[in-house]
Length: 231
Image 1 (cartoon, rainbow, N blue to C red):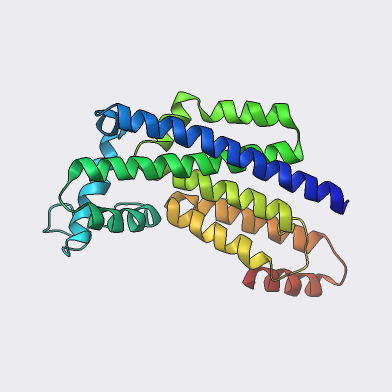
Image 2 (cartoon, helix red, strand yellow; image 1 turned 180 degrees about the vertical axis):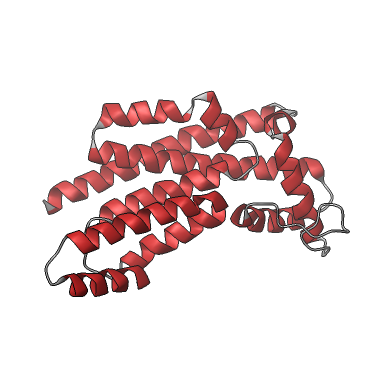
């Protein structure tokens, strides 16, 4: 079993590196060769983020017009954009190029993780199918739009891998590794605030698993489930 897990892990990382390398190189070449790529690929809503990020980086706070504050954005992505805007300064072309490059890198890592876990758990053909689905225009365009979609996909992929690896959603016993799963759920909600529904669903699942499975009286199972939730 240990040998099989080690082989599966090596396969996952090899596939991850291949996907990351191919996708990143292809998109970097496109961004460098096509001057209009950052403007063409960036969604209109992304400019709302970028203006707020530039204002925050300049010391005006999170505001669109430098008059009224706003919180109408996904927090984690904005926190990533602010230092990028700070480095780019007033160069809009540089800002768009760097943000697009970050989106490409994040999307490539997320795609590699998803393909890797599918390869390790199911097989090569399903992994290739999953990789092809990532390039479906609706998914690819949203992930490379200059908005938070690629970041959400990355954290979601990491959450799936951690949950499968640690058994946090299937083992009713509280363990220290549950904290990693909880941290990823928190990051997922910061990446997209509506992911709170994902968190609530997972919490409900853990509750059902804990109360219906394992040993002990109902009171003991309830206490154990509560401890798992606190971890």
